[in-house]
Image (cartoon, rainbow, N blue to C red; front, top):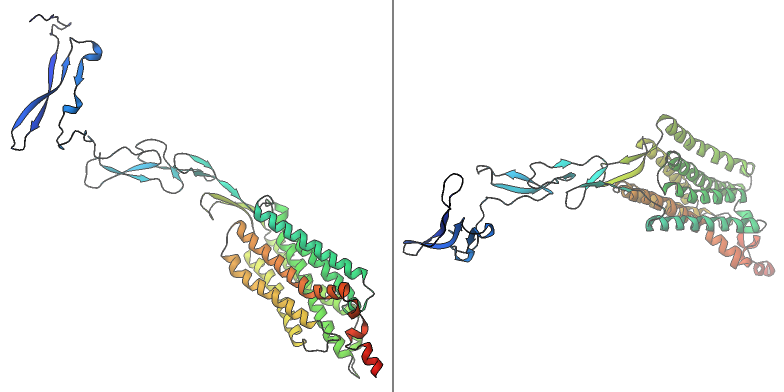
Length: 410
């Protein structure tokens, strides 16, 4: 036939096969179609030649059917066998939360370390984000700016009262109590800064206790003011023996006694189970919450509850004294400021319990700032308005409800 013949080392002639494809017609008759050739006489790269387009598969089309039951599972998934089917039949299931797989057709997923978390594809573990209320984020900047502004405003009001200390309205407001209240309000604003920034052992120890003691001093000053309003009114009645109670001793005793109880709660808290910084890995998936652990929440609520009790007593006493003559009456402003104070802290409780992480800290800061600002605005802004813009009302006659015109007519 004109073809060269040769034999391999085993004495076998060169292989030469046609590749046949069975074609079944619609009437069931089968015929064979040559679709390729395997010839060892050809060059190595041409030994096998196939006409893919000529092949007719069992599916009836030219597309090559899959030879496996399931496709391979990509990294980030694991194989789960289908019940009652061959082992090559399986489903690809995404790895569970906190787990990864970094191989194709992985049978199992592997959990990340405690301080690691999977990336979006669940193919590798990355360090978790650490979350706390920072000075650099927008929320931290806004709260810090508000605290500094409110503290500066409080000190400005204090300067106004010191400068006009000899005027009637400042004298009538018991200047010593007023100074004490303004200083404690300014400190209550500034203690909010202890809640912002990375938690440290010292800040965790001081932030709740400092806030609790300073705020009780504020409420105690208001309570003492309320008592002095009532005593001053009673002392003006003929034959009253209440005049001996007028003076700085009663307010000082009230403030010291009320504050000592809060100091006892805070000291017991620090000595028995002091707050400490901790990294909480369980509150929020994929995030480390860096927070202060209060250690004993019951003491935190005891501290806040005592502060609320003093505010309630001040509110009730001021409310009962609201209709006293205007010559001595600060009770209306005290009532309104305590109403704002109680409203803020009553709404604080459910908001605080329903938040987590840095937003829990932000809620408490909002309570501190808004309640302090409520006391400052309700109690001192009307007086500052009279001192600065209506000096004609800053007289003893105006405070006593008398006018120069009335004196002339009389």
